[in-house]
Image (cartoon, rainbow, N blue to C red; front, side, top):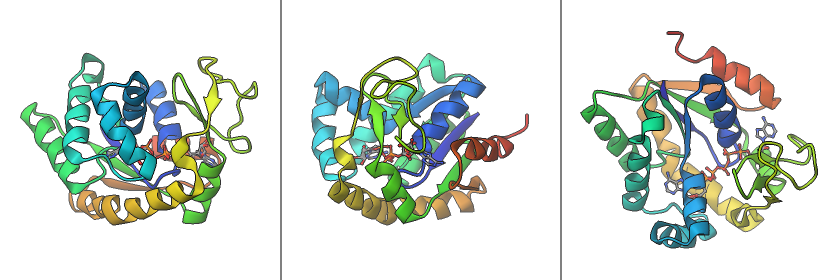
Length: 215
Ligand code: AP5
């Protein structure tokens, strides 16, 4: 299965993609995680991406498309993948379709996770992520077993610099201006499934699982 999780910052894409990819045994490809890893290594892509991420802006298509197309061509994506945070512009969506098409493949489903804006802000203002595996936590909604430590790998939890209130506001604006048009794009292609993203994390997992292709 090749699918995309579409939704605003804080809608739960990373949380859901982590759970579903593990259940299905397929790769979880998160553009934001890849940029943060590149930035912490200090390589060229990371240095370029960091300046955009800090401002809550999208990293230019050219850099983003190259990075993701290389990633989905890796052997662990051969059985399928869940894309989290990509595509985010029409240009990115077209580049993805073209690259998969050349291999006789296509995106099967696009899950649009809908969450009210005030809930996005509540979630992001309390989010902590693991410095090592990037798993997200929230002190109220999804607390770790040991304060400050990741349940999955024991890594240190920290607050993302782009989760500060002004940057969150900018990221949400950018989402509505540049990414929300993809909803219509995938609706027209007959691939969009709308998922109510409010409620307990486990309830949303079940809504997504119920909407997966059955074969
Ligand atoms: P990225 O890392 O992709 O950030 P984002 O899309 O803004 O999404 P988030 O990670 O903020 O939220 P999420 O939807 O994954 O929610 P989560 O599961 O963590 O991108 C960061 C930056 O990188 C961008 O701003 C841009 O600069 C750049 N970038 C990335 N991709 C790009 C692209 N394609 N093109 C150009 N630039 C790109 O959940 C949030 C919180 O809520 C957590 O604390 C979680 O525990 C909690 N939570 C989750 N589900 C629930 C629930 N049901 N109820 C209550 N709490 C919940």
